[in-house]
Length: 441
Image (cartoon, rainbow, N blue to C red; front, side, top):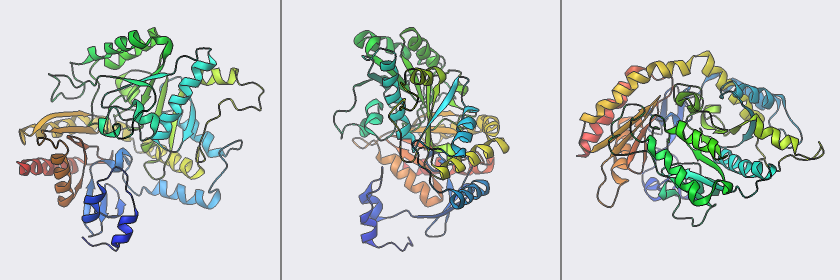
């Protein structure tokens, strides 16, 4: 492969979520991106089958976002995040509420999805203290859930490989995942699995609702391999949380702003939580940014119990909260999503995406499950004994060699093409993946 990096330069970078030893023997270097394609250091065009990291639904190098960022750099490159403001943060907060379910109309800005989750969990604990219920400190996540790389995120997350190395985290407990026998190869939401929401009742019985601050789940679990909620499952979680005075948090870092063919996963699945975390698509991946949407009653509780009006209602935030350049990128990104009708486009193309993805079932007995919703799909690959992640890695590397970027994780291959993808590109991606999996036999 052609690149100009020395071995010393390669070694200096401790890469995130990467097999560093393997990568530095055979680097995969991306040099540019435009539309739905990357270009690597050999000049090859690579179809972006994961929208960056679930981030770039508009495709790459969008002119409107580029121009907004360029103008903002010239005008106001940074503004202090505490005690002072700039106009675009308020414009963006209001714009985000247009995408949120009714009532989630108070927006707190962060720098990433991990920070958004940390913010949501901290506010949940503080909220109950403000309400005079300070014993409500425990959290409930879900097996196979991913909630970022911070200590709070791995604590409520349920992917073993992301937890075991780090020891004790926050006090949290986990619901079972919803991949139940009989749900394999379901198209969209499975009929089986709703009953697993009732496991929340067992956890409440064990720990008592007076000690539980919040339940946090992804409406659709992305990083674990596109695990779609069964019919009625999220509604049942909502009912139980309401009955037992527990906050329900949806981690929508992947699902917000169009991926599900709706404004949010909450809208797609018809359930409104108390809190929504978001990041990724909000700026189309151009610059780091996250946010959390809270229902007004949570915000009002802090305002009504904040002491003198010059005092901080909550001592929390980040140096880069509501960064001016990120706000400019986000405003342009959300404008483009609406202007191009991309949420409607994803919704209208979801059925053809679903049919294309499920054709892979015939490619190989190595495929043991396929799941899909909106513009996302996960394919489970039968493991090699003792090495469940090896085949997905080999498949992803072979796809890269053929000119396609897909994500591998644990025993899955994950797909999430840009919202701007054409049917011909879907066909090319799926055909290449089917051939690659066959070759693994």
